Amino acid sequence: MEMLNLLRKDFTAGAIFLLGVIIIIPFMSTIAMAAMIDDFGGINMGIFTLLIAGLCVGASFVFIAIDTSYKTDATYASLPVKRSTIIEARYISSIIITVSGFFLAVISCLSLIHIFKLSDPAFSIILDSRGIISMISFLLIILAFMLPFAFKFGPGKGAIAALIVQIGLILLAPLLGFIKNALSDIWNFDIMFFYRLLLEIRIWIAALQAIYAYLFIFSIVFMFIVISITLSVRFYNRRDL
Image (tube, rainbow, N blue to C red):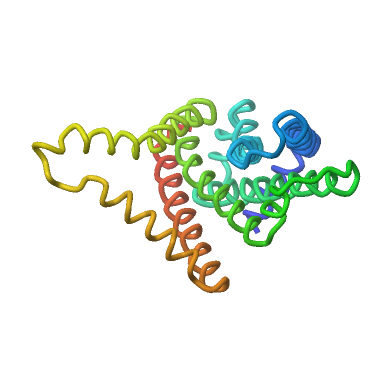
């Protein structure tokens, strides 16, 4: 009941900001996809993924940003509510906004197809059930990765810290390849073993039947979220509110 009250207060207090999200995500995604089709001959899935991740995950931080701006953390600390309950409510609201934002982008794709009569091979990927589940899973993992930073450093500094770490992880594979080549004559250990292992896991998932692949993906996402909540609760409990 306490969590439901927190969620209701969040969505009521942030109604105006949520209205902006409802307008901005379809507008930005529609403009971006139409521009890519007209100017570049088709939708680039890499750019589309980054855009949607930025819009949806960014929108999910709206309640944390409101709390920081209006210093409502101190108010919550004075209430007979566990900090873990506050964190769990934030996660639920962030997940709702992230998933809803992605479906707004899906609606934008449908509007381009049926209203503006545009076509692109990427639409079959974006609107396919596997594409939708994969994209939602990716967004939730990104969200689970970023939220502990937000509860550790605040939404602004936390987002920057999470972005730096993510960029570092993206650059890790090329860096490992460079190190391997540089040390190949003096160090025979296969430093790319773990990278190839990840590629093999991806191929293994693709070979599974749909139901087992979905269960595996959902389990991974659930594990990320549980670990993320645990870290966020620990960081939030240590904060001086």
